Length: 292
Image 1 (tube, rainbow, N blue to C red):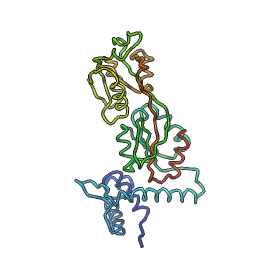
Image 2 (image 1 turned 90 degrees about the vertical axis):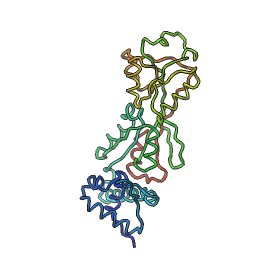
Image 3 (image 1 turned 180 degrees about the horizontal axis):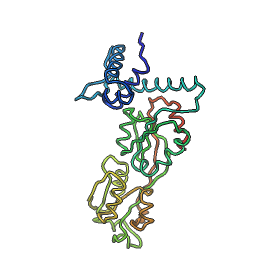
Image 4 (image 1 turned 120 degrees about the vertical axis):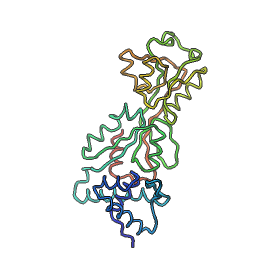
């Protein structure tokens, strides 16, 4: 009979997340030998390894990837058992790892997390901000419980829930020749110098689709943050498609101008991501209830 303990499951989950026994031991306040022994005992009982050893790091093998969501579920159910058993089912604790693409993480974090954090002060929220492709990859690796992204996602393992409407705008420095045009036409953008987000970004994908309907221009810079793009445009290095929410302050201060481009479709949806195999315990359900 297999008799795997919650501690062994915790060690397994943390090693899967962090990639090393030492890092997992530090998080769990164990000695490294104790963490190694817990993993070895779990693998002995399973009669199979759950990690591949690659250049000093541990990476989940096929068996480990199958077992990780089950181990996470068992730990979450164990915690729920304790809360309900002690009569404190409404007092949520623990850690919730959320991934957000750059627009959400930098400009809408209050909308995303505010209600949840205020309602559950004992939950530690870990927010990872990256581009959409990297958040999707982390969701598929079970490194995050939830994601919120600005790009379209179509993967059979992920459930996508609409969250907010969003849009990009084309912006330029106030003294740019395009700002003096009374009624812009697509032909006015011939030879334009564009500052774009990095490949893998949803903003980049939507920008490229929009720019493809315009006369050829030139990409002069690729940057991985909307703030960096704003500063590049303010400095006169080019024009850019950026999230509308990101330029409100700069436009109000007169440092940027938004160009009227009704001939470009720059609308998009922001979406919540959930892994279909992931157990949706009290923490995830509480977060979903707050993300209205």
